[in-house]
Amino acid sequence: MFKRCVKPVAAKPGADPTLVMFSDASEKAMGAVAYIRYEVQDGRYESHLMASKSRVAPIEITSIVRLELSAAVLSKRLAKTIMEETNICFQRVFYIVDSMIVRAMIQKQSYGFKTFAATRIGEIQRHTDPQDWFWIAGEDNVADIISRGTDPSELKEMKAWQCGPEFLKWSVEEWPTSQSCGSQELPERVKVVLAADVEPVVTLTSLFESKESW
Image (cartoon, rainbow, N blue to C red; front, side, top):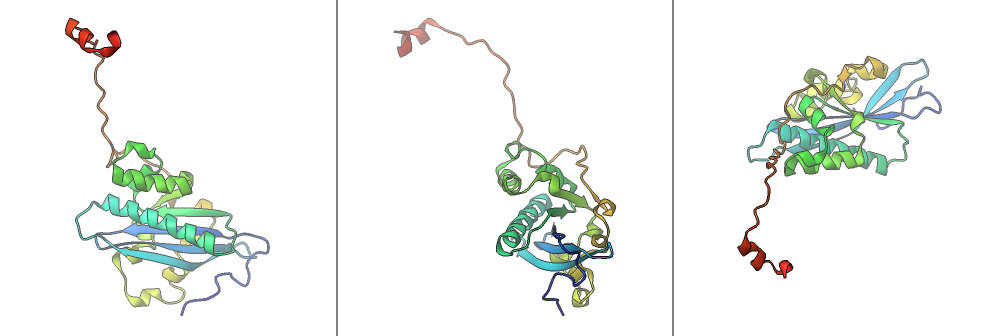
C-alpha cells in the first residue's frame, strides 16, 4: 500500500519541506526517485516517496559514467517537473549520486568535456546549483532499486523505497554524504593541444598574391 498523502499529520506548522533526489544507473537500467521530507513537531523528520522515473539502458555499449550522468539528468528533470506541477514550496533540493566522478564532472565547466558529457553537464548546471549535488556510498543509494531491481517484498509500506533511507530522519549535518571531488582524472575530457609560437614567414611571392598588399 502506498500513501496518497505525503505530508505527515504531525508536520511542523509553517515549515517548508525539502525535496531529496536520488539517481543511479547500471548496464541494464537507469533512474531517479524523489522523496519529500518534512520536519515534524517533536524535532524529527519524516520522508515519503513522491515520484520516480526509469529508463532502460541503451542497447549499444556505453560507459557506466555516461549512464550515471544520464541518470543525473533524469533526476534533474524529474525534480523540475515536481516543482512545476505541484503547489509545494520547497526550501531546498538535494541531488544525491553514488558516482564521485559524476559529482566531480558537475562541478566543472561543461566546455571542457566531449559533446555527450558537455550537453548533459550544461543542462544540469543551467537548472540546478552544483553545490546542491552530493555523493553517497552505493549501499545507501535507494535509487539502486531502480537500476538493479529488487524483490517485490522490499517495496512494502515502511520499507526504504516508500519512506526513503534511514538517514533522511536525521538532520542534514548527520547524513552520510560528501561533496569532496577528489583529484582523479575525469573521463570525457577534451584534450587541448597548444601550438608553439612560430614567427610567420613572409616571402616575396606571398606579398604579391595578397590583395591587401596592393
